[in-house]
Image 1: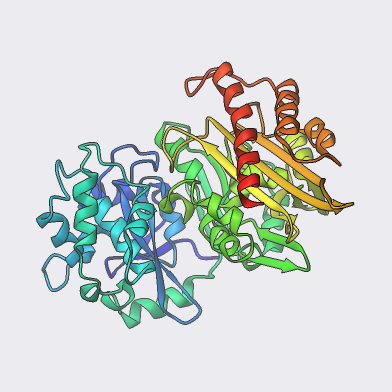
Image 2: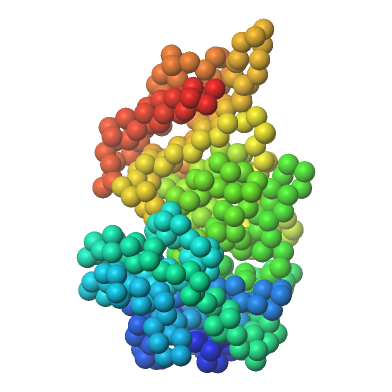
Length: 475
């Protein structure tokens, strides 16, 4: 196993080892590389000021660039990749067209958010050669401007001539760099320091072997978005960590008949792209989950592992009776997501995939999220509904009804009593009103800074009504 982390920054080769690989990229860029264009404001991945572009080798040899929050990106997750900072966007010493448009169209005020804004717009052009206003609005959802300069930022983005934008893979077309990154990107890694150790094996078998030979609890790392926030908040850095990035079978989404299997290292962005093609209702809901920077790093399995009641991905997975595959030294077992949330896993196990059945073609799915901001915000209340109807004697009756709520209890709340009540009934305003009453009997919402119990109760009732109204409109 290799004992160093190798990556490139703005075309320059970097090799680090020991405790240094556990530093966050933003701090390392500013303090050790004097690349101070990258700003640190929230240190939580919420504001986007620290955004960079990360070039990831593909099978074709090209680099695919994605935006990431560098404040919660540990150096060990850069191995085999190319980091482009705001300084790396210049073309022949001149500002890039994006930087120039921000400067000349009132897109910058105090300047703290500006480097991250520039990187976010760069990422939008990487994905969309001719972006629309909606592309800009969605792509900038992970960037906050505390001077409230959003109009100027949007105006500057729309003023950019797409024909003058060079893709980063051509701007940084360095054959030697690409060749090395393609060669080392699958290398297993083992790095140790006094208090920390990191293993990044290249197979699941090796991962399980490592877990079997240690008596300490090993922290499993994928995108490290939660881990990065914790370390920035002073949580003690010690122990053993094991990364999933180099295990091929954990990087896949597969469809087997009507069963969908999502590997433990599949990012939220990859899952959203898959759903846009196969389950559009979930794809649309995924737009409201996190920001592009977070979704490019965080994983669906990580959302499950944290098991927070406001974890939006849990909502549709609970609704669709998802199961988790747990793999350990004694073999593999399948556990319903509800059972996992109640019992957890054994010390020698890790979640290797999540599975769920694709909804039937006639199923009508709806997902709702009530939050203070449309994107990049925690849910006050979220809800998921699934409805299937059948015709009997010329009358439509409910053959399947599923409903789940998030943000109202210690975990996502699946309302079995409501589902039983709705079975075989006609969908009507009266039926929905009764179902909402039963929902309030089944779960008593908690109160916190985002909303009182009474407010959440009102939201639950209103979301039932909203679902019914949409079903009537679509009928």
